[in-house]
Image (cartoon, rainbow, N blue to C red; front, side, top):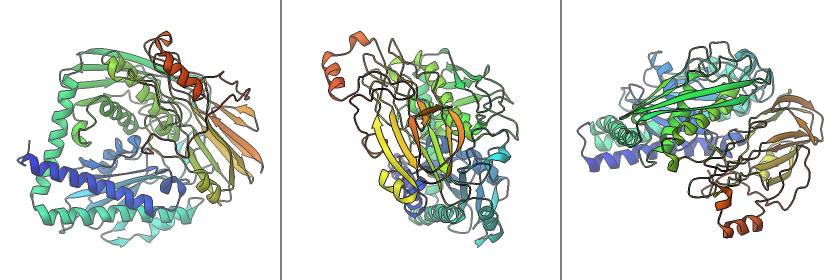
Amino acid sequence: MSDVDPVTLEILRNQLEGVATEMGHVLIRGAHSPNIKERQDCSTALFDATGQMVAQAEHIPVHLGAMPDAVDAVLEKDPKPGDVFVLNDPFSGGTHLPDITLVSTIAPRGEVIGFAVSRAHHADVGGSAPGSMPPGAREIYEEGLRLPAVRLVDGGEPNEAVRDLIRANVRTPDERAADLRAQRAANDRAEERVGELLDDHGPTLLDAFDAVIDYSRERVEAEVAALPDGTYRARDVLEGDGVTDDEVPIAVTVTVDGTALDVDFAGTADQVAGNLNAPLSVAKSAVYFVVRAVTDPDIPPNHGCYEPVSVSVPEGSVLDPDPPAAVVGGNVETSQRVMDVTLAALAAAVPDAIPAAGQGTMNNLIVGDRAGSFAYYETIGGGFGARPDRDGMDGVQVGMTNTLNTPVEALETEYPLRVERYALRPGSGGDGRHRGGLGLERTVTVETDATVSLLTERRRTAPAGLDGGEDGATGTNLVDGEPVPAKASIDVAAGTTVSVRTPGGGGHGDPDERDPAARARDRRDGKVGDRRDEKGGDRGDEKVGDRRDGDADGR
């Protein structure tokens, strides 16, 4: 470990994490789109000059684990002080095209000592459908504007040509420009704050970059060493790729050997015709999230957490596709299944640490018009899997996402949409010694002619219960009360109603062992009831959902 005393290291670690968190505050408060300022679908982090993550804000797992590849792409461009790079190319540092990343050099004294990185989901980046998430896409060219790492600011001078290129290829150019300005402001704040730390601590700051990474690596190695050595396997499926309904297998073998964790996806399906292909960075991100979930949450999140973990993926598979594969659904849906199978494999190793399956989907709902007057995007929460010692949470974002929802007031103010219903789904959580969390129903009326796109999973294969617990309910999508496919893009007329009913979480343990007092609370709180058929059926005694999908702190 680098020669930084423990007290100084702890002070600097907290200060660096504070900088990353402050970046996020600047981005969220400065953004114009509800997707960023309300849902907080964005992430921020600090990297050292070699491209190692030093600190991150606790934002979106699928963003953060994939960020190092974005910095690697920038390092190939010989970055210099005053440079800001913009990129979204999933085959060169990105995740999917709506996630636009800004990478800025940090050079408070004229020498690059690190990078500030912000990644945000932009509600439209062009492509064949409003919202840039066309369910039936077969090539990445259909999904929107594709940007390799290119200078948005060159040595302090804005590159107006790149800005104009972006504006000319999106449906909501003013909103995109405003959100990019917010990302720049967040990165600028990082350079300012790191400069202050350099003034206060001098070269010790750079030593602390290495020291905090070493510290996290050693802590994760100790956690992995505490897992029982062995080989653990699991398999699950995706429910079609948007082009066909054929199941897409995801298989994993996890090997624990001392302080090393090897995760091998041999046996996973070849890349598919549709858009559920996931770039390798996304697959790695999902694995890293699982490692973070089964180790001590107090370990500082940085590059060191990932060093004991190796990830192997077959080339040309759905988890490492060849261009020009469509990939927009891989980031939001395939990442969830990668997380599910990795957790399921580890359940055999550490059964007391793994919950039953959560909803396993982000329930992507996109509504926009082709004239470019608006683009609404939302992921909708659902049931969290029951845990070995407690029930799952109701109506939360699960797994690789960590967003809030769009509050009803903001949604109706910003878009030609009206929320008709927002409620928990009684009986959707799997029964067990501990009950799975409930899914949600979100029903909106579209008040203008528009295109509605749905990109969802767990409509056929239920979230699995664990240790004798029952499965959670599957989800369903309805347009004017009629079921529509899990992945669909539909042109609708004004007055059309769209309902998304999200899956519940799996139960944990034998249902016969559930505490009678807990059963009474289930009935009191409306958590039990018949699972409705796809067209609705009896609504029962539903418990209305809160304005935000999240746990007590709103995340």
